[in-house]
Amino acid sequence: MKSDRTVIVTGAAGGLGALFVERFLENGDTVIATDMSEDGLLALSDETGRLHRITADLTDEADIARIAELAKETTGRVDVLVNNAGWFPVQPFEQITAQDYRTVLDINLVAPAMLTRALLPLMKGHRWGRIVNIGSGSIYGGVPGQVHYTSAKAGIVGMTRSLAREFGGEGITANIVAPGLTLTAKAREVLPKALQDDQIGQRSIKREEVPEDLVGTVFFLASPGADFVTGQTIVVDGGITML
Image (tube, rainbow, N blue to C red; front, side, top):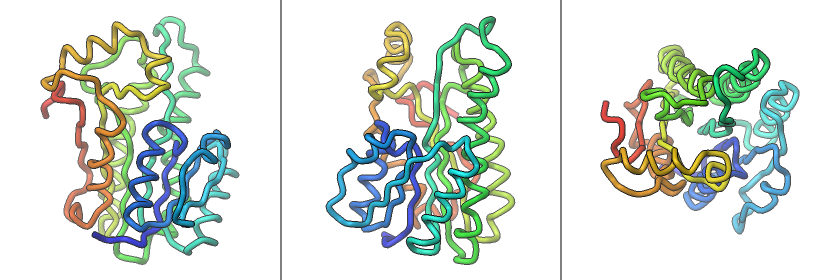
């Protein structure tokens, strides 16, 4: 397994991101963890000395520049970018304002695109790189009350495929992990219990989806084992969606 990489994980203080950080640190990688929550970042465990924390708002291009500068100062390169940060509000469509729509698109689509653009100069030139975007299985079936969110996550698919085409010659792959409804603490708080139960009922594997279910797929796409995989969406939803 390739180790001693420089890995950037966004949304690193959340239920998914913290597990991704832990897995890459276990592999011997240097990890730059970013999130809006300073307390959440400080709570991340690090017995390796290879974890670097930076509080940032990814909708702020100045903060994005600070992340790129930290990577440049730390190792001078980026090998793996995991675009995990996101926001998934529930709003009836007829109540969504234009500003609501823009905010959700900015966080879930524009921010990962701009961060990827800022980090590409540190990824190019090494003939190896990984971009792993966290999408959503919701784009296949649709979700009432999340029209803006599913729109943004559908946009991630087009962005990822285009990145795969544009930078494959540099040895950089771009792929998506599309979870089903994953019960992080935040998801349990925000999403209706009826929706959570309905998802379980639709699955081939009849249980809750938890953050631990996604770690292996993300780590695989960031590994040399996925050298010839790019532009793909891997759905991890317990068998609701079969493509």
